[in-house]
Amino acid sequence: MRKTLFVLLAVMSVTVGTYAQKKVHYGLKGGLNISNSTALFDYFRTGVYAGAFAEIKLKERWAIQPEVVYYRNSGQGGYHIITDRKEHYLSVPVMIKYYITPKFYLEAGPELNYVLSANETVEGLTYNNIDLYNRWGLSGSAGLGYQLPYGFGVNARYSYSVPVKAYFPAVYNNTGKIGMTYTFK
Image (cartoon, rainbow, N blue to C red; front, side, top):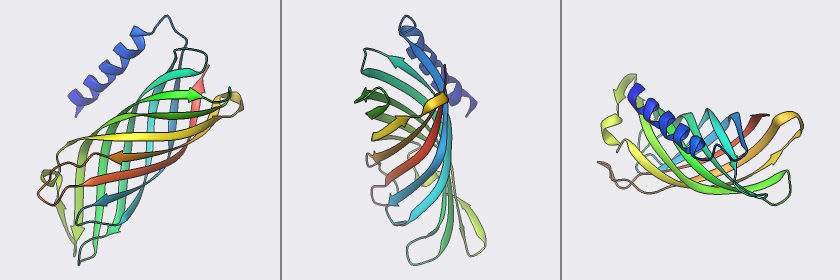
């Protein structure tokens, strides 16, 4: 996991370094996520996310925003039986932002996801389901946000997962996120 995190941070650093002559702002983000894994486990799970980002202004209304985000899903549900499931992900979205006004923006871009762990408890027994997943996944994400005063902001994003092969039918892990940002200026 440390090697993966190091590689992801190195990619983000190179991206930011490439545009060093442009205007760059760093920030933190966090909030609530709601996901739905459509396979045999078709139910909604809630969780939290937290991460860091770098917004690189390309032109007056355009920016690129690479991020590194950790998020966790947990919930109950399942196929014919009640289970308690917990999943941990590391995600690297690269969003293209378009500012409609100086404060309101739309964003879209790809998101690379890595499954850190996936555990399921059934009738008191806990199973490590990491082998049921292809650890790497790709999502397409779109969202919107608004910059508030003093560096704060609010945003919402929906990520639609590209189906991955698993031991079960194709797994789609679709996630909606609502949260806050803080940009250092």
